[in-house]
Length: 331
Image 1 (cartoon, rainbow, N blue to C red):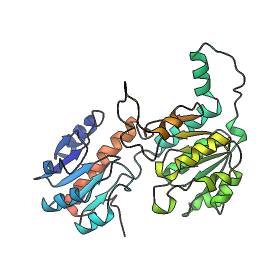
Image 2 (tube, rainbow, N blue to C red):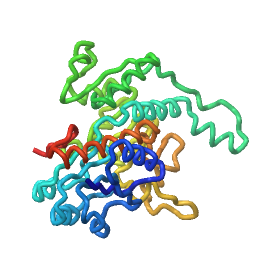
Image 3 (cartoon, rainbow, N blue to C red):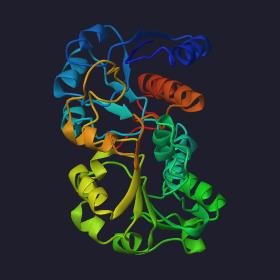
């Protein structure tokens, strides 16, 4: 058995090497992301493992089919950059890692909120200029706020637990309700209720056609004045131009963002000495009430290990048995 893994970073290599030793399977690690230009490297292998934010193309899966490869395992959760028609056409089995560490994402979302509530970016900017005064940057306490959680899957539930620990009132919305949360009476029936009742709105849903730009001008208009927005899920959930308008008007008091709808080419790239050619992103980045991290919520030792080793387990299972525990169904 031979597996090829694309986009392998230095921090992933120890966990890949550990898995190879434990499973006695040959794995070729390729540093470059998977593209039509380097898919030929997969010829002679039995399965492909990959992770990237940029889209996978039809040509990649066409070549895999030509090479007799039908096992494709993602090291991440999201499959929105995988062309469904292509994997069906070429009979490619796809797996993901649905729960590499829900706590990693949940913890950073709460960290972002706390930094915004306590005005830490503003204090850092002032103190860098020698201004150590408190006013006018008085803070809010999370224990006095209502947090609306949109999406109560593994990550959403992990975030709820942390918010509850701070003493916040937590409400939730999900098309698919968790029975335990249902018993607690946490759910509201509509997104409009989340918008109307919440001081903080945090998104923990996948990117789907139905929720593209779910936070738009209309949604922001239904929210409380001075609401805080957290997006540690997918950039496409927010209409960024609408967010900027809401920030300008004061409708939104602050935003914690680990994703951005046009983040490919910006995040996980060294831009030292150069200007980022994106006026919308630069507008957000310049604000001291917007806290941006570069899609790094997942980036913990536990999560990286799980992403590498669970994806390899999935790929090995596809090759051996034609099925995997975390196979993604596109039906």
